[in-house]
Image 1 (cartoon, one colour):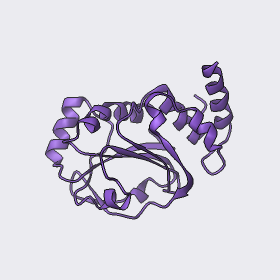
Image 2: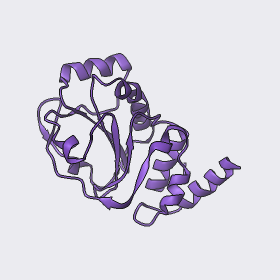
Image 3: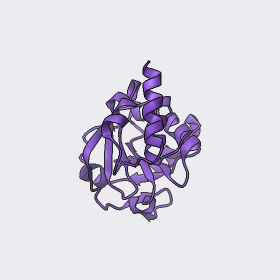
Image 4: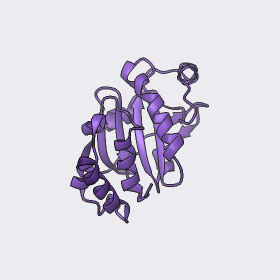
Length: 186
């Protein structure tokens, strides 16, 4: 019965819904397992324009991802739950990343590019960017008090949902939520 309800909700959302018009209750009904920790905002919230840097030290911005839904993950190499969820974020990006959706990981605080590259190599992470928030400016402006924190941004770059703690980001529940948001039918 629950599967049928989820399929019906997913199908309804996929037939043209986006966060501006989607019924938040319908999206919430897709949450199962670790996705139950995902909290949808009652109204989209602006995300501050804060400079981050890439693995080569170049200034970057979240504005580069406007026009698509973004799963923004704030993490650190020293954080065990962050490390545990990174492979699922990588698999989600490999399966669903593209013109309408992107997984963006930002290491906040004291993390070295060398340490990130080593961790990614050890964990088999191949599809995620190396981005850093070395002074924790982004984390502070987003009100992040512990790691990991994942924030879903709409195509206008506004926060529409947040999950504190680790999650199975490549679970069927997570993929159903993202497919519903981007209007993909399968």
